[in-house]
Structure formats: structure tokens, C-alpha cells
Amino acid sequence: MRESVGGPHPALPGGGEDSIAGGGAVVRTPPPRWLAIWIAACVVCAIAAFLAGRLVRSPWDAAEENSRADPVVTAPVQTRTYTPPVAEAAGVAAAGTAVKVAPVVAEAAGVVVTAHHREPGAVLRSGQVLMEVNGRPIVALALPFRLYRDLHPEDSGADVRAVQQALQTIGFYSGAVDGSYGVGTARAVRDLFRSVGMAPPLVPPEAADALAEARSVLRKVQASPPGGKEETLAAARQAVADAELAAATPLPMAEIQAVDAAGSEVVSVLPVGAVPSEDNSVATLRAGVLTVTARVGVKDAAVFARGVTVQVAPTTDQRRSVAGRIAAVGEFRAADETSSLPGYDITVTLEEPARAKFGDGQAVLVRLPDRGKPTKGVAVPLVAVRESGDNHYVVVLAGSAAREVRVEVDRTADGYAFVTGRLALGERVLVHGTP
Image (tube, rainbow, N blue to C red):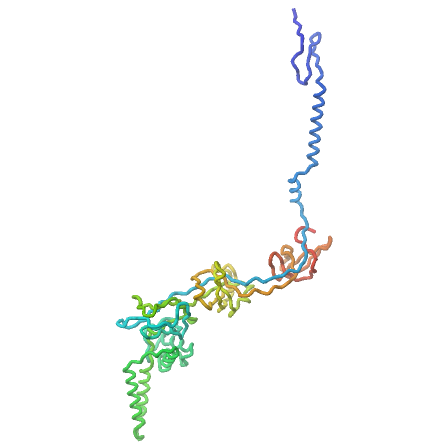
């Protein structure tokens, strides 16, 4: 017996229901109306969202579009004031070499400082007295080396020649620089000591006695009757000349200190009454006065000329500036290990080296003391100036028309170029973009 099944079957896809009609056939029931409306609404919303996305632009879209734009930027030709900067050059201080002053005296006498003539910080120059030791002066002479012996009449050699040259330079010797210590050299030594208020070095007593005796004999011969005394008189005069040479003023090496031609800085001196240590040094000099060497670029070479007064200060403290003078200007030098700047090396001597207190090798700046006067000129932005070979030009815009105008750049400052050319104030020059 066949069972008949009544009631609905489970829901099938599509949302309708199936039922079995007579004879076993399955009949689909249409889905509800609300489902069709819901599907249609979703399709409409999706289309609307797509269209809205096509119409609405995000900030990123605008930024991307702006990045591809090439705007035209212009600036006016204008008058600006230009104040020339202080011309300066980087340099290095050179302090020189320390030299001990140690007079050589008889071992039994010892050494004691008896007077000062130059204090620390002073520059000791040729012909000046440094101090007194054992009551005798130490006089400076510009010598290429220190004396290594006492000089006496009839001595000869390179040391005598150096002394003659030094005495001639300061105006005490006018004879031949021949390296022979004669009466003329002795007279110059005597005049040197007297010029500084010091007694000349002593002549050996026996030489002075021999001179006095020779002069006495000459006077007696001259007073004798005239008959047949010509030979005797000539011999007496020769004896006096020989005695004068032997009694000429000597030059003790203990009383001469070699200094540089430009002088030497006094670094220290023992106090009066002090007895030196084992090395017998009574003072310290710095061979070579404190100087500064700096490299000047080509564009500033004209203002950093020989004889020009400058200000020198450490790079770390511009308030500690001291006055100086350009003593020498070297030949043009390319960039090297000393300086990456091609130009000219200048040498500056300081007017008060003791006040400067620069260390050896210390970095300094050399500056001209005054700034230039402000001047006015026609200026355009530096980025508006273009190059064509060795020439410079700007592009002037007037409405949609553009023309190139050649210019000469006088100087640049603060992002502007001061130019000369056929430009009118207020005209606009192209800074960026393609007109």
C-alpha cells in the first residue's frame, strides 16, 4: 500500500517552496516579492556608489595632479641695497722657537741678574739691551747664529762678517764687510754700547799699557831735533798703529744675544738678584716674532696688500682681536695640503704680540677693520639668472611674450644677483617654468 506524503517539503534555493502535485510532479512556488525589491535596491546602490567614486576626488588625487603641473613663476626686477661683507681670510698663528739666553762667563764668577731692560711680552730688536748680568749688558744683534767665541782685534771669520753686517744694518759700521776685526769694527762696537748707555767692553790692561807707552815714545820722537829722525818717526808711528789695533775694543760673546732681523719676543726673564740654574739661562726668547700666515683668495687679493692694517682674532673668540700689519704677500699658489683655497699666502706681524696670546698653530681669522659702504643696485633672484657659455642672461616676460636679456653679474648676496643690463625696474623675469 503506497503512502501519500502531505505537507510542505524543505525550502529549496530561490526562496520558494516545492510541493508534490498529483501524479508525483513537483510544483515551485514563486519567491516573495520583498526579496526581488531588496535585490534591485542593492544593484541601484552599487551603481550609485560607483558613479559617486568617479565624480568625487580625494586630496591624494589633487596632490598627484599638482606634482605633474609645471607652473610659471616670475619675480620683479627691483632695487636692493648691498652691504659688502668684511673681507677675511683663515690663517694659523706661528709662535716661533724658544731660545734660552745663557751667557758664558768665567766659572768662578758665577751668574747673577743685576738689571732688567726688557720685560716679558716686549720685542727685543737688534741694538737693544735685554738685561744686565754681573753688571754687564746683554745686547741684541741680528745674527744668523750665536757667537761661539770672544772677538778680538785681528780675528777673522764668518762670525766677524756677521757682526759687521749687523752693525752696518743699524748704522754703526760703514767699512767693508770683509770678516776682519779691525779698528773700524772695534769703533762700531764701542759706539753700539755707548748708544744704549753702557760702557764698552774693557780692553786688556796690558794692551792699554802698551798703547800708552807707544804714544809716549811717538811724542818724544816728535819733540826731538829734526835732523835724521825720519826713520825713527815712521817706526814710532807704526808702533802706535799696532798698539791701537791691539788695544781696540773687543766683543765678548757673553754680552751679545743673537735675535731675528725683525726682533725676538721676550718670553721670560729671571728677577733681579736671581741666580740661574745649572744651564745658566737667565731669560727665554721666542725666535721669530709671533706671526700669522693666511691664504687669501683671488677676489680679495687687491684689498689684502702689503702694509695694510688688519685685525686678527682666534676663530673661537672674535672678541680677542689684535691689530696687525701685512708684512709680505707671496706668489699665487694652487690649492694644496695647506689650504683648499687657491690664492696668495700673506704674512701678518702683530703690533702687540704679548696681548694676542695666540698659541703656536692656533687657528685665527684675519679681517680688514672696516666694512664697505652700502650701495644700491638692480637685482633679480639668483635662480632667475641663466648661463649660456660664458654669458649670463634672464628671460623677461611681458604678457605672453618672452625675450632673453643679457646681463653682467656684479655680485651676489642673500639669494639675489646684482646685475647690469637692459632691464627696467618692475619688469618680470622668469624664475621657473616654461612660458
